[in-house]
Image (cartoon, rainbow, N blue to C red):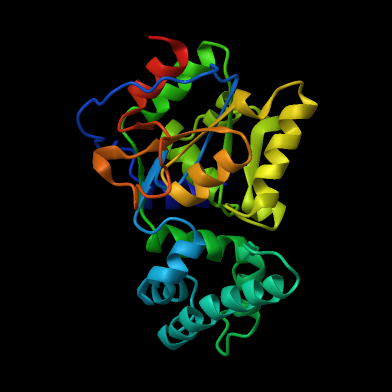
Length: 285
């Protein structure tokens, strides 16, 4: 979509974020055959990360006000959206916990559909909920690729590894990632295996819910692989590392400049600070 392209160009930086000095190259045994990457905090440096992180940190209402203005609503409506948005997320999480789903995921465009419908001052042309959701995300949560991410993915793909994504994400994560790493070229399509894409917004639950990683293990076994043939690369010690290892996957903590939130949960898990170390560890370079 042309309008999405304009918004991405205006809000998403393609200038890589430095990852610091080279560190030790971890030893992986066995060598993985599939490598799954987290997105926020791993492939992309982000101000807040996923919706759960935004709920904790609660971004200022400015992004909702900007979204309201952009689409022809009043500032007061934007301030009401800021309150109603995170209330809707919290209520959905509570409903799902009552059903036994520990880490539920919402469909952000459905929340925006209700916010737009209930606005007291709609403009003549009410925006599509996906447009409103994307625009608000871009203004609230600027991102940029980490140094070496695109190059490492290309190198691993050339060497025949199957690459995938395992992310707490929304629909807008995909065009944002595609633009940040590929600049609009069909980067995701050319890089990642469609059989190894696991997104919380499509599944209805998020990492580290055990169902998330159970799906990955099941996919591996149906492909004739063992769980340890799959490597999870992520920046979150709990959501990515501990959860993956509990299900028998290998895991590498990505901690550029020592930015991981905590080291307590990773124990003996290997870690990297740069993507070239991952390429060396996996491809033997």
